Amino acid sequence: MEALGVLSVCVETPRAVFGLPLISLRKSGQMRQGLPLVLTHIVEFVERHCLDKTGLFRLPGSVKRCQELRKHFDEGGFPEFDIGGDILTSASLLKTFIRELPGGLIPEPQMTQLLKVYNNSKEEEQNQAVRTTLSSLPEEHFNVLCCLMFFLSRVAAESHLNRMTSENLAIVFGPTIFHVPLGPNMVEQQGQCNALTKHLLDNLIHLLPDMYPHACTLMHLSSNTAISFPLCTTASMPRLPKDCIEYLRVLQ
Figure 1 (cartoon, rainbow, N blue to C red):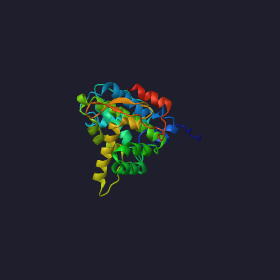
Figure 2: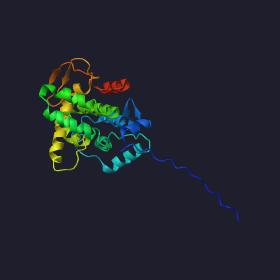
Figure 3: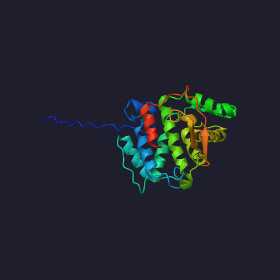
Figure 4: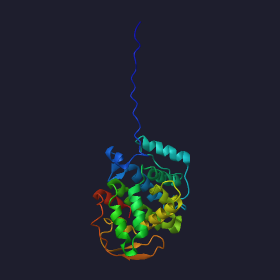
């Protein structure tokens, strides 16, 4: 009896993107300019087509479509978004990517320290204390946080159209950025994290020193009032990669 031939089929395992540590994305070549490719792909679409959408990031997109897009990314693809139907869905997908980062975009040790200095520091010392704590973030986390905050400032700048002020964005993204543990103080702590998120948005010059190396005038996100910030000290801050800085400047 002749032996039956066995056809060997090699099935490539899909490359996961969602739910992986940022350092794993970097090691697997899924980062460019210091940022995850999935992040920049979504941000560029929202920046170009969605900033005037009322309720952006607050209103949910299609769950089914979000799962389809996620599958494309996890299989190594870069899906084309539909300008007509993917506006809210792309925003939901961005929140999902950030929310599912293991340990949170701002890990627990830095979250605890940030809340401590934010709640207990004198007003004139607060931003310096926050900058010092942010400097202890892993490089990949710091880069993504900078990109996200800068992008959200662009969303808030269009709040007269989309109704998403820095306060509203903080309510939406506070639970996405900070993974508050379950417990009797969970609600109170989440409220503090949301307030801290708003503070970061309203004081962007202190979060992105490489973007604003000189005294400048920024648009206050919650009131659309131009205010001047003094020169900030950046010695204690991690340096953004040059190509990451250039990417962020393109969004201006």
